[in-house]
Image (cartoon, rainbow, N blue to C red; front, side, top):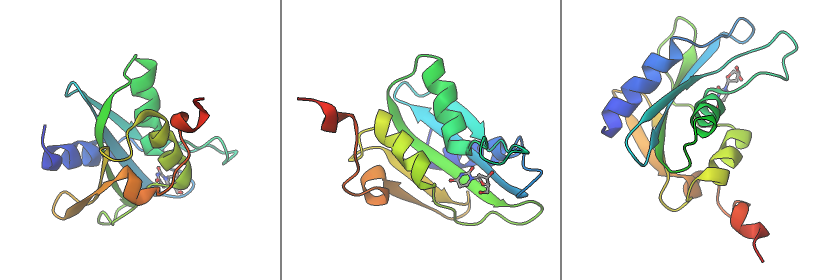
Length: 136
Ligand code: THU
């Protein structure tokens, strides 16, 4: 799996987005240390707050299957019927990444398959709070 393929997986995942309210469709592709890819999409809700972001859908699918070690996540997003746009993950999703990933090495790919950039989690969440802060 390379970065371009992971971005293409995210774009594919976006096709399943359930977005009757915002019409903003997001797909994510999460790469495990063993090379397996878990796809996720955003799933909205009439009550709004139960909405789940694409990134968290991918993480929760993977973690619920026993995965604990992750390399990278690609995110593809944009308004329904329009081209993909550069979209960074929300703060809640960054915090979920912080729970399971090393911020120095975990990479977040943002943009489109044609033009994307790689960030470390640390760049997106500097001075983040994580599991290590609770160890004595
Ligand atoms: N959304 C994501 O799926 N990921 C993000 O990082 C940002 C926001 C979704 C949530 C909601 O369904 C829609 O985009 C508009 O906020």
